Image (tube, rainbow, N blue to C red):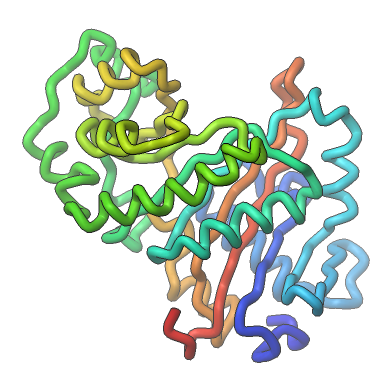
Length: 295
């Protein structure tokens, strides 16, 4: 780990910069993040191939920020779409605030187009071992358009069954933090990942700014539960698929990269040129704290 941040900061933020330039794109998300952090944290400071800067004032390690900013400004702001997905390793409303503020600050923008929240209080640490359902975009789930029923296995593994009432209440409070940014138009659209129909309906009913995006996991190939499909259709939510693990990076993996620190949250952002749907930038930002502190 870069010596200048070791033990000097209670909290650190690490940005991988635009990983497209590091030839890390188009891989599994947890692999992209791990390798992106490895390049950022363990790069030779004298290397000219990867420029890493230390923001000592804010406790940030930033990789190739200048190149990222040039990617974001080569087209007008109205010509690009910026989307992000936040993964929480623990329940913390402060982590939501840290993640959004870091996203806006590091990308140097006044707003992003959408943010999706992934929160799994009882997450599996093994990538993609626990999943909920797939959408009609999955090669083996075309029948979901007709509204197939939820299996016993799906019900047992649903978000609400695994996380209970406490998990739902925590989710509502986390989502409320995102609503604050949506009300200030710093986030244009809000989304949520991996919820079953019951939890999504409960969140939707309590929300001041309702979600417009729902994500479901493709890690196992089944069909979209009929209730979820119908709810999204009736409430005009865009239903997307993904194959992200519940925790994008487990604590033990992060500990190998940054000894003494515990990962609290991470996010992935993607920047597309609207008219051509071209991915021009993609990267990860991670928030971590010293392990000795019990937040």
